[in-house]
Length: 235
Image (cartoon, rainbow, N blue to C red; front, side, top):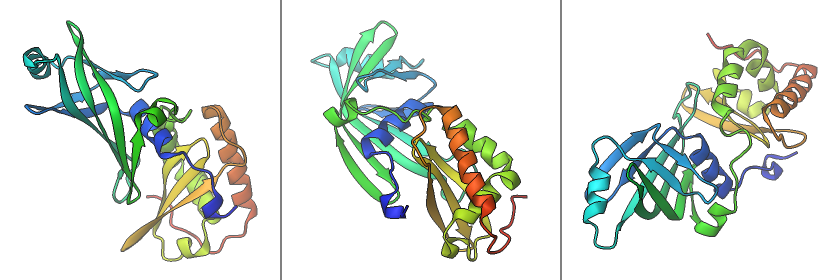
């Protein structure tokens, strides 16, 4: 399967995956910029339920709002869970309205989303965002990639044999960068550049155990392929 034909999550699915996996966010209104860590959840309609931060700035600003709501931006940064060059994988910005949900909570109603990833920017409408679902591996990806990386010599190093020859040439390190239902992305790093290559699964994974089986299929392919040269293992 060529790189061009490898299935990948859509921008809307990636946005929903970022929302599902994120532990922190930044809310910006006309009067304040507030960072929240571990204080939000996302519902099926992509609305963000925010526990009122301890300083109460957002709630106080809402109490003064003439119509009971505020225009706001909510920003997320998706960071690779393993140490690679340029660890920021994506940035997601939601524009919408912030309202009071109850005495201790606020709700953010998104109207649009902008996803910046791999040097490309996608504008995602509300309908597309609402009708898309996060990847089934989204909330497990960080742990699974960390485990792959920890067993580098037995997993990532053999999988690197599946990279195109030009991606292996000059690479001093190969690390796992992304994992979704469609496949695993490896980043090969040379002294002055890096390249990302998707290794597609034979069939889409529906849960973490399924993804593990698909990775074993890739490993079987990799170990059956002759080595072009020995890639360095992680120290």
